[in-house]
Amino acid sequence: MTFGRSLFVNRIGGQMAFLILISLLAIHAIITAGFFLSHRGEPWGPPYEGPAQFVTVVRLVAATSPAERAHLLAVAAQAFPHLEIRPTAAMLASDDRADPRLRYLDDHLGPGFALAKLPATPSVAEGFAVAVKLPDGEVLTALLPPRSEPPLLGSPVVSTLLFVIISVSLLGIWATRALRRPLSSFAKAAEGFSLDGDVAKLPERGPEEIRAVAKAFNRMSDRVKTLVGDRTRMLAAMGHDLRTPITRLRLRSEFIGDSDLRGQMLRDLDQMNAMTEGVLVFLRDGQTREAAAVVDVASSLQTICDQFTDLGHDVQYQGPDHATLTARPDDLRRAVANLVDNAVRYGAHTVVRLTGDDACLCIVVEDDGPGIPDASKGAMIEAFVRGDDARTMDDRAGFGLGLAIARTVADTHGGTLTLHDRAPHGLAARITLPT
Image (tube, rainbow, N blue to C red; front, side, top):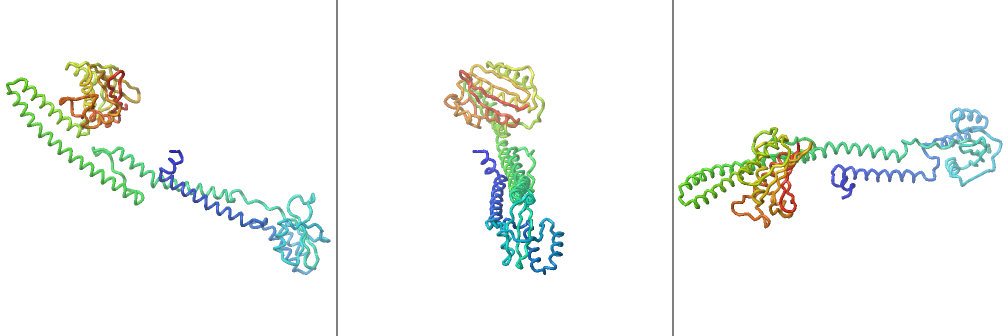
């Protein structure tokens, strides 16, 4: 998608500004073309008043008696000194009817007057010198000054540009306040939506349509929170109630004489209990309600590695001795423990690495197992997805919640969980957390 299409087509403010700009340009192009076409053949049209003044004075002189003309010409010279109208002895022979200015004066003077264009002389360097013969035979000469161009700000092109700039600027300000800002608020509210109830509701202000959308979004968020809260409470109650019969079955299993049968039943009960606890943790969005605190991530990772080593697994920590981060300690330990548990289940050797800088900390859990195909990596971090051909599980392998819980914990800390291949084989689960 091109920059212009992204700027104008995909944004409401850009679309409106683009359409109005095109409309204004088209309207003013038509007006400007009409202005110039309507004045073709009129070299001395408004607002230049020199020719009109000349025509008026000549008609007045023609209508005045010869005895009073000298006084009238003196008054006209005071009123219009730029015309320089004065009597002359005889009509000059020079005539140029091809000059549009001469035709303009001839049309406005009417019949009975004869016009001639005077030749240029050193004294007539600028302007238009003309001689006019009155109906009674007297001849007058005049010098019409050159027509001055209108000021720059008065030209149609500049007026169009100013009008377009002002109109688009006002439209942009309006679009920003009325459309872009509410839409940005909607996007932020949707992105930061949480079931904890910590996100403030959208302000219901602005145009009617914006207020209606804000009200609908707030009602929807309330309904979603209510629905998920009811589901969580129902399943949490079921999980709590299941613990009692599981405990009774565990006690009764201790009285079974057959040691193999007793061990199988205890393992099944442990699996049922782990499944119940895992589901409850996942229903709580993979996190507890503990407050965030400064955590020594390096010490926590070393502790987790020691715990798995005590159980007989080959788990090694590589990284600094100390590295602090503000996080929920129990949630972070649960996420890393789930990754290590998956690693020791499918590989013989596991490495937990910790690296970081001023921007983020990176926790990588590597194993030497069969790995996960690229096509299945995205699905494996979803809830209740269990293995594939590369990672065949038995009934005691897990429930498909470990990676989902780890991903949720990373998300709630503002980080990410990604899965990568490890050479020559194996899997590297990487949690990246902002510092």
